[in-house]
Amino acid sequence: MPRPKKRTEIFALGNEAVVEGALLAGCTFFGGYPITPSSEIMEIMAARLPKMENGVFMQMEDEIASMGAVIGASLSGRKAMTATSGPGFSLMQENLGYAVMAETPMVLVNVMRGGPSTGLPTSPAQGDVQQARWGTHGDHPIIVLSASNVQECLDMTITAFNMAEKYRTPVILLLDEVTSHTREKIELPNEGEYEVFSRTVPSMPPEWYKPYEETVRGVPPMPPIGSGYRFHVTGLTHDRNGFPTQRPEEVVELMDRIHRKIDQFFYDIQLVEEIMTEDCDVCVIAYGSVARSAELAVQQARSNGVKAGLLKLMTLFPYPRRQTEKILAHARTLVVPEMNMGQMSREVKRVNMGHAAVRTINRVDGQIVTPSEILKVIMQG
Image (cartoon, rainbow, N blue to C red; front, side, top):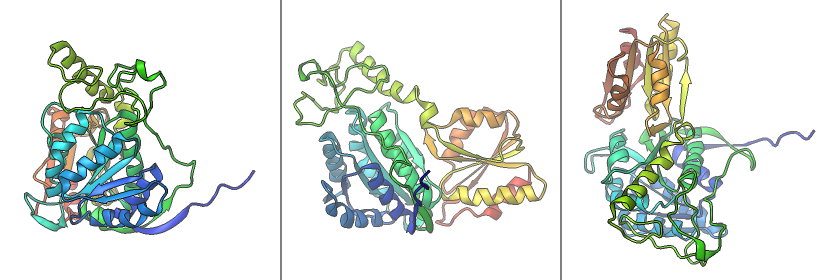
């Protein structure tokens, strides 16, 4: 049998790995506006995309226009993305809601920095977690992913594109300044070693096509605009043909479906990594760069005789409730370290419902949460 092809290894920043992941996933359009600490993603895309067949890079006049360009590119059939940080993420929220309602697949990478407002432009934070879930108005589903190391920046970007295409929805990938600017050796997967999912296109004749018709998966097929299928796009509540409606039964049908297409696939969407959680008395729940500090703290706690474990969140929303409840069956303490005032700990407490003690570690000074800070709380039991 032929030997499997050896993977290519490179040293890369987290932001560089995001670009590699996007290109492996089939991204051919980037629309954005530079902002620290995400700018390397845009800069590298500006160099790489124009050299690719059908690759298009556009620097827009601001983040609002960037999201509009990405939505338009996706509707034309391209896999499209943008990247930003806190202030730009705020500006993107209106068009993010439009993409949710129009069921437009796209990937938005937010490299978090200190805030509010322009805050700490070059310092890490995790203050955009609840904004990622609820930043755009109205009752809406959203998929929010995270990465804690450079290899995961590549892998989770591919995952983000696959989920966006599979469920016809925008997907947010939350990084932080530490993860995005860490340089590590990573492996580039060979072709065929990873899944690449592309949106389903209609197979029926154009005259039979209804752009928002109910399906078993709740995800209607999506043709490129201009391919001969009538496809009306609006941010207004719409019927199965895409035309605005205020009929209660049609409004409920639409809202139920765009939530159900996410809710019924939690097993596919809610990704975590469990480290020594099988018998843990104390479990740390962490994400992003803080998860790296947490993993070392857990290892040190084990060497000191404390049964500690780590639930690393790779999906932040929909929150991995099932995985947390499994740990609550035996853990007496949950430790939630974050570079914010306690945004993910709210989700943990909501699931915990008083079963275990929840202890939070919070930093908002632009400094990382260290392993020693986490270890100190773990050892308190």
